Image (cartoon, rainbow, N blue to C red):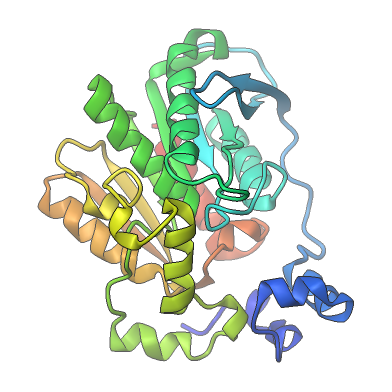
Length: 315
């Protein structure tokens, strides 16, 4: 189907913009970019109890934000959530982190822990962000009783780079401790050091998307190199899980955006999971672009994605 009108109607704001860095540096371009990214008249996110704390990690404390249903309780489902941002951007306040956590908390009656892992900037590279996420997931598991969470009902998930980190952490905990969460929920995630070739269908679709919202091969290669601190060949299976042994991984639900250069990675990864005998389900969100969880739940496909995520977490 066509690009959802919530996005397509604002594409003109991005005319002539080819780089986020350049757009951010110019006040006029920055204003256009901000207008495109604005949630507009979005209703407020669900009002839930929120507190900030830390999880101990090998590189120091890892900041986390805990979202809890209004009523006290025990034995609730838990959800450890990682935002995206190409491993080098993003924070706990971005909609993909905060609004998603609030929505899943309210819809699933779950305790959601959003993780502020260290970003791959200023010399930080893999495995530091990965180690932070492993530490945060381990902390939620080990502190489940104090959090009011049933340790058998912990789901791990993430969006874009956060989904990569969530998957790598789940693989690490499988290998090091023989532990798996109840499920892994991934949104528009990329798990390959080098993207597989796009299909003719996807190539045609992406021609409709502004350059600024694309992930051409050179840009995607730069993301990998920045994260691993060198050539793509340095990425092991925890850094880029498409290269991992996938047998024994917990059930996986992968949400993909129809208009996303990175969709090819998720499609190949879910196929590999199926071959490895993993219980996997892939759901395509029609008309959506990469990063759709930054949009409000009043947009139909976003609401459906949040409903599915919440259903998996609550089960």
